[in-house]
Length: 136
Image (cartoon, rainbow, N blue to C red; front, side, top):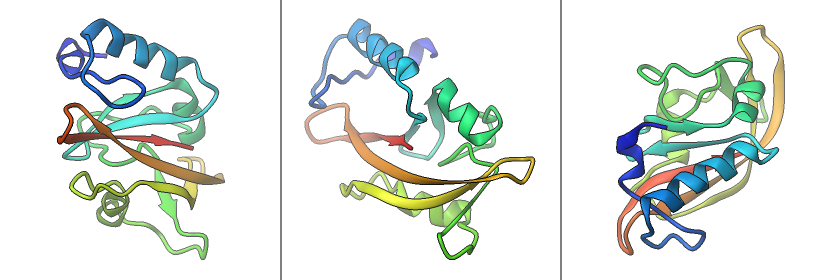
């Protein structure tokens, strides 16, 4: 986690909190047995845990990967989900959460995993949705 990412902070109900508590939230996300990652409002991945890397079969390139660290993603019918369409799932301006959206994740070796994607907005202030928490 970079020092700058600790400037905004949240607690379990999405309210402003101290930078040290925000760092503790990242520690918790690293330890949970769920694949989890966080995107900023532009789709840049700002955090991912080791379970996400295991699911994706790769470590995301934080300079070029946006919205997901998956090599490729598909709808349940096998149609590829473009990065543009994946960004619609994670649209920061949209306050909607996505719970249990079925997605097929493809690793670089071609192995596909069927997952349920959950996306929740993270409120860094009472009105500003500046990040999205994504879990599988």
